[in-house]
Image 1 (cartoon, protein in one colour):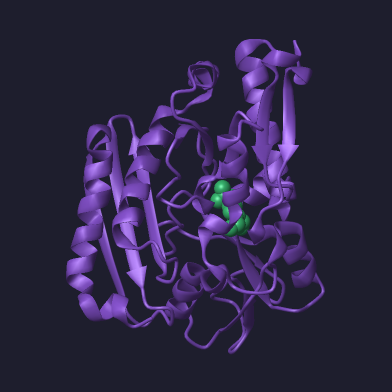
Image 2 (cartoon, rainbow, N blue to C red):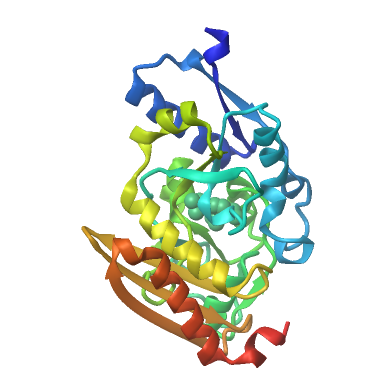
Length: 308
Ligand SMILES: NCc1[nH]cc(CCC(=O)O)c1CC(=O)O
């Protein structure tokens, strides 16, 4: 019935569409619904239009969500599918992240052209990335490497790499897998020494607060351990920085009722870094993230955040 149509809002990139279709498939399976019970509504965001500058310069994460959130608030869509990593920690009044799908591989993948690993790259090699975190972690490992701005969607970046513009690039393994492109990966970076961005690898579903029909539809596809990990990582990020200008890594590993968090902040050149590891239970997820952020703030000192 047309009135019951579930409208799924998404950006139009290959990765965003893959995530929206994955969400639709899970809902179809959970409820025994046909594909035509859903409409996938593609929404172009400001972030999709600006492709030549680092996001940290043009205003950060909200750029990929604003138009989608307006569509939610205007009731043109019923739920929005996002990469958790791209979501700001503060949402507009009336919206919430109400479900998370089971997390994919959270690690960063190295895709090398002149060498299969970062360690194997020649002196002064060029690596493409637009992520402050990846740039800082790379410089920390290999100060001799040159990092160049590399934006565009995942297939575009791989095409640039294969055309020889750079010696290597870094992408989320989760995104590569969702696009069926994981064969491109030449090395997977250890979580311990190359921690991911908060939220990496997890799909978040945003809805209107108080929409009981949609809450009930999402309930069976919500993955509670991923939800706890994300609550921890987002509390950490929210307590540290809203500006997107500090390289921040944070990953919460969930094992049964246990949650272990690893957080790191770095200067963009990777020279100064502070890290913390905290253990607790799922029930403490938000407190652990907040405590980790407070600890890093204290240890880094006021000069750390004032520099840029
Ligand atoms: N900022 C772009 C973005 N947002 C989410 C992913 C990957 C998928 C994920 O982390 O869930 C990517 C691409 C990348 O970092 O390689």
